[in-house]
Length: 389
Image 1 (cartoon, rainbow, N blue to C red):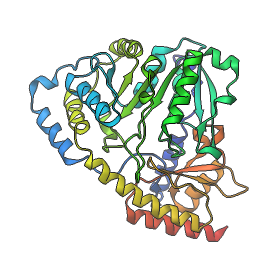
Image 2 (cartoon, helix red, strand yellow):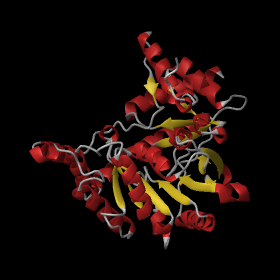
Image 3 (tube, rainbow, N blue to C red):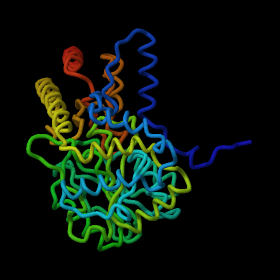
Image 4 (cartoon, one colour):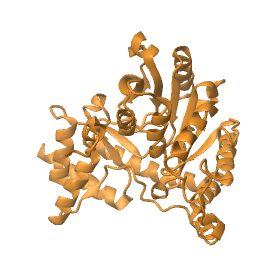
């Protein structure tokens, strides 16, 4: 007797977990493994956020169920953040919804919007959760290729008229995981216009909106005039405030979609622990200097590894945001074969580009989630690997 649904049985294996299993095997054999595969910040959560959590935990009323859509303090903080950062006005009661991390939000958003066999335009290369979420919802993923020659901008001209007319949703993600590409406002203007033409909901995943370098400041899709008619934007505190394990995020924008997602979630979960929401509110209403300090650390790490990789003959673009370097693999090797060779010969985990779609072939993603001394060791090992070529 089979108790497992077909959708779970047919779910493609999560490549990240396979590398994590090999990591455990190597460590059990005494190998010093350096994990640059997952984008999990190693920097501490800022002290003022932890202190707020400690204070909020002491309040007995905070241990009750949260309002399903999130507590008022958190939703108001999100609205205030959008007003200050993007000059976008949001109604915290109807246009903001708390999420248990944006990954949960992505999966449930798809469930709330599409019907079985509906089409969803998914960027390639792109975060695997989009395609997996469409599969779990019984939908059909249609590849939206990103143009490597033009900063991984979406290639809307490659979407057939039939697919555009039948699509119900589109995902975009800038600053981009995995390519570390950034977007200017005109990218969102084009995307919103395309989606408006074909009556498509644009879901912009802005998980890395605050992780930017130099003078670059990531725009919001909601800055496009009239964007609330067909746009929602997902945000997370995981990368910007080093709060991955806290599982706190939000979705903002079109109020009908927000209401539908809130209805679905109200039948699935009871929102995040209120002290976490209130500590997150403290983070979003701060002056963001803690984020800026973190970004300087990531920028220094990227500079160090980028210079080393280019000296070793690897091709990579220096990013203006995210925690990643998107690096071309040597000629004659596939993304997966090279990632496996790096792991077996150096003990370094990198992610093959094909984990993010067919268009990721020829690349690996490197996460800058270890401190400078470990990066020096990474560089030493890569130099040894390069000498063996």
